[in-house]
Every structure is written in structure tokens, then in C-alpha cells.
Image: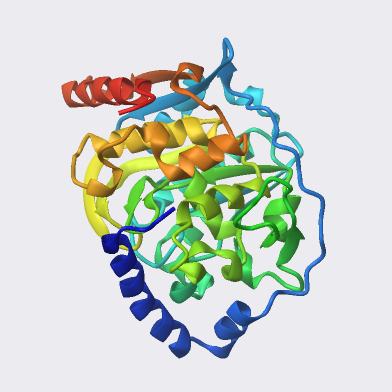
Length: 361
């Protein structure tokens, strides 16, 4: 795709920040970017069926409120119940967004992480791990897990916490997905690949280069730094690379943090808004479409205007790869408010519902 002059200038601006930051980084980071890891080639895992489907449609739940554990429970009820996803005796990885050391909406809320850990443990999971790998110029991940409060929240709820890029002795595995074009081979977290169940905990936010960040984008944190879109910032294929990085690990449940959303800027900082919602689904494309529509209700980010949510390049490529539903007629949106009714929430829901129904703009 031919880049606009504005996009190319933005990429060059990013490069002017990225390259000096890498040069100042510890040798271990520079070495990580220069050389492939010595990692085993593993089979590509098939995309599992979505357990949260009703009448052939992917269910997406939007729950409004201020009590995160109660909102999570209500969202699961709307999806049909957590028993649709057997967790007893399994090894579960919860993957929040820990791009840096800043609070939401740059990163996932510790309150959601704690509630998700409690949910998984109550369902009988044998092992619960919370893990991520931060933005390359924001390493070390371990420091960001502590600074954001995610480590304390997860450990207090009964999970172990891991910086995925710091795992020893072998943090990575190599995959070669047959459908990938931009990334015919890449490396992903071994812990994520080997987990019985992965649950995705993205935060809903805008992104200067990827346009937006939610379910699909959050899995970039499972990829080896050499394979991340930021390393090839001049290529212009951020969106397609994001989608293809979803071919290695397949979360069974996505719980997007919309308590505080980023409506302009991003991904590390930007304009925040209190939406006080959680979005839940078993389908990353369906949830991303709804999350995009939610951010569009604020009208603050030009990069996601002027086309249908279904025409966003991340979503277009994800549909081509069969990562989820392919059209709005395959999506069922269900909503609830925990606590007092909120007229503002009802107006937002109506706008979101109308937006996701449009296949073209």
C-alpha cells in the first residue's frame, strides 16, 4: 500500500526517536534486535472454535459500571457463562498490555488483572500466570510490571507474574504460519505457545501508527522484538504484521479494558476518557470492531475516521487469515449496566451498534 506523505513523515519521526533510543539501550537489547534467537521450530496451532457463539454469531458483551469484578461476572453471564471454556486443571496465561510503566489507558488496569486472576482460579485452573513483554524502548518488562501495579495485583490475587522476554533458559519458539506474507517466520513466547489457555486482556486505545490497539494489537507483546512492526517502521505494513502475529497463539477469551480508554494519540500516552466499560468476546475481530466503534463515538482521532470499522487494515487482514468473523451479520452485541442505569451509556451503545452494522462507509 502506498503511504501518504503524512504517514511517511510520521514514520520518519518515529525512527528519529526509535533509533537513538535503541542505541542508548543496554547491549542485551541491541543484540536481541540484531540476531535471531536460537529457538526450536514448532508446529502451527490450529485456530480453535470460538466457545462464545449464539445462533452462529460471535457474541460481544459490553458491560458498564464501576465495580470491575461485578462487571466481569456480568460480562461472562452475557457470553453464556465461563463453563463454556473449561479451565479446571489447565495452565492459563493472562496477557495484559504492559507497553510501558504508565497507568491506564497506556496499560491494562491492575483491577481488571486481579479480577481476571480471581475468575480463572475460581474456575479451577491448576496454574495461573500473568505475563507480557513491553515495548522495545521501554524495557525492562519486569520493571514495568512492578511500576504499573500489575505485578502486585496479580500476585495478591494468586497468580505468578512473568516478563515473557526474560524467561530462562529459552523464552522463544519459532513458527512458520503458511498463510503469513509479511512475516512468513517469526518467534513468539514459549510460555504463551505452551499454555493450555490464553486469555487476552488488552486496553482500548488509539495508536499513532497502527491507528488503534485492542485484541489483535495486544498479541504483538508475545512476539520477539525483532519481529515487531516498530522494527520495520518504514515498511508501512504495521497493520498486516499485527494481524499475522496472531497466527501463532490463539486466546480463547478476550476481555478488553475500557474503564479508561485512549481516544487520541497513543500507544504510550494520549488523551484519556472515562468510559467505565469492559468488552468481552471469544472473537478478536468482533471485539476489535466494537472497540473501534466505541472510540469513534468520541470523534477525537482522525486516523479511524472516514471508513467502516470493517475496513481498518488490521481487521481486513485478520479476516483474510480467518482469525474470526468476517462481516457484521456474524456479530451479536449484548449489553448490561452494573449499578444505576446510565443514559449516556445507552446513547453510546446505540451509536456503537449502528456503527458496527455498516460494512462500508
